[in-house]
Amino acid sequence: MNRMKTLTSLAVLVSFLIVLQACSIFRTAPVKTDGPPPELSKPKPEEKKPEEKKPEARAPFNVPAFAKEVKRSSYNIAVFAPLYLDSVFATSLDIPGRTMPRYVLPGLEFYEGVQLALDTLQTQGLQLNVQVFDNKSRNTDVAALIRTHRLDNTDLIIGAVGTPEFKPLSDFAKQKEINLVSATFPNDGGVTDNPFLLISNSTLRSHVEAIHDYAQKGFANKNILVVRRASSFEASIANSIKAAYDRLNYDKKTRIREVIWSDATTDQQLTQYLLADRPNLLIITALDEAGAKTVLRKLAPHRGTYPMHVFGMPTWDVMKFKEPEFAGITMYYSSPYYNDKTDLFSRYITDHFRRVYRSRPSDMAFKGFELTYYFVKLLTQDGVYFNKDMNKPGNRVFTSFNFQPVYLKDGGTENNMPDYFENKNIYIIQKGDSADFRMNSL
Image (cartoon, rainbow, N blue to C red; front, side, top):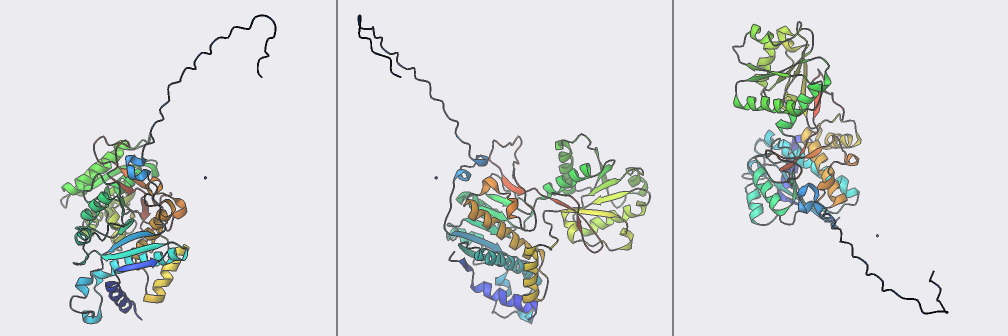
């Protein structure tokens, strides 16, 4: 059975089985006898000490719900994945041309990773009631599910969601005080004041902060340049890097210089920023492959004179720089995930896909497995409000999470309620010819 036919069968099955049951799963004084009786004095009344008021325990992160311990014998979990079943099976259960559209595969593989995790957790005796929703379906869109109260009794939501369903699902999670794990969306979507939102795929702001900190601490003598184009978006990335510089408490930090680049930038204009006696650390803010390669082509001829280490954005993980002109340029990118696929869980997933689909699992399958396993374990260990201690090394699957509260408002401090929680663990990855390598240790 080839992979495409099997995924087709899986899609048909999912279209019928939107609600899944993962499992049905403390010395008295001597008395005088001669002479007059002793005078007895009235005992002084004891002075009452003022009662010391015990300070009230503050709720974790100033969120009252997080102080509650709510444990159940069985937990209700909702999973959202972009399956596009309405589009694929618009007229019948047959797929035109017998070929599964490529845009369906990421959602299906995420779902398959989720299901593999649930199967694993079931063998550990966990009791779970799981509902799987196609967030690209007209009948099970987020607004309809909220309107019909189908999510009201949910204990945890795991969603591979983006626009437009991210914001309404986040608002619902806040209203009902349900933890929502955003699995794939690398953005906060404008959400604020929602401590029940957990962003696992770190935002771009966190990526550039991590890249800056690594550049500052990973090299002794260095010349740090931020190379950006003249757009408001890339200017905002440069401003985030400058803000990271201001916050960094490091006595050896090197000042950052900004290079505004365009197609008209000359070699003379570019090389005036480069130094020959130390590594030039160039943080390039282009997210698109064409823009990134255009900048690199301008830099490439000077790599023999000026030592270069090029840091790209998280989107560079899927870019290929195989052109001969880029040979010899050391490149890095950032990622919240790193999996060398040598652990037991990775081998289990890889073997399953090889046996069933005759192919390798994509990153979406690994993400579906990891996030489901990790957060369901937290749920069953600490209850519905596991937020007091989300970073448990003992629950680690492939990557190491570091969820931290984010305070977006000016002057925001830990005395306020967080706007959301975000995975702040960012790996710095060096691109290699055949494989990429993790540079920073955790």
